[in-house]
Length: 385
Image (cartoon, rainbow, N blue to C red):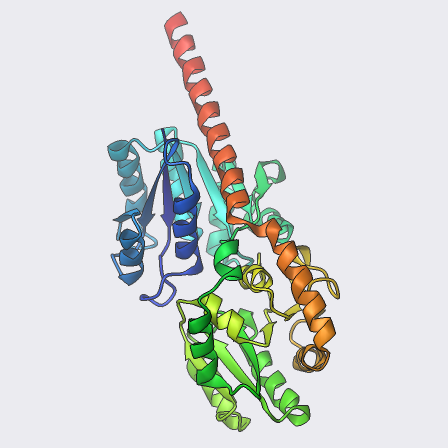
């Protein structure tokens, strides 16, 4: 049995609700071949509600809690490798990648550095990545756009990068709890009104402000439209102020964190994804699987995931007017909306969690076997001398 330890900087973005990566751990855990792989999680932070969320779903979670910049993390991770017989480290986040790669080399354990996003790299992290560039066994990029980011922004040699798209549970998004969807919709719109939704963290790179500005423009042409912003984040207060300044508080509501994303998606007549940058666009895969009409920005991995006029309507980023016009087009042309939604649902097969896990398992097996061959070779040389 191959023992995998996922090391992650933090399990929650807000200290309470599980991050998208934490939810992905649950999906991976459910799909892995339990006879061949044992999956464990280690967080660099103290125990929180997101950790309990994972534990309740059967995952074994360790909490290192040495501080995100402390080199004590290296010995702590190395200790987990020894204590639990870990065969491979799977690293998520900057600090985890830094300390995890060092711990892996100290113990002769292979590691996978997994990049989920395209972010601004601070100078100290750029230096750390450059120093660790030869200590990277394999880096997984969730899209070709992220692969380019790893090469240019994180100094990972191109030949060490493998592109593996993220995956989702297609069944869950295609067959939601319809009662939950109806209840969610009833909170924000009547049957006669159109509900336009955005689902994502309330952070600058998600383009929330452009969704709010687009809402104002849509209302000029469709006064009975209603809007919902699903998610939490550090920009919530600022976005609520913008909503009030534009006089939209009665028509645009903040739903906060929603655990049943499937229900929220199915409640919306149109889903808008106004991201300014996006490594993969998990919500795009989810919205396609749910068969929703979608407006998305042509950024990062999203341009690889879907085609304009074939699966979704794509618009330039940071352009509220373009968002508004595309959403209105879908709201006013039901045949177009249905055609795109049906094609998107079929296309979402490419983002199956089963395909995602199968690719990861193949990678794990290759790395562990390679390490075993290396160890046998070294043992043979030792016997000769």
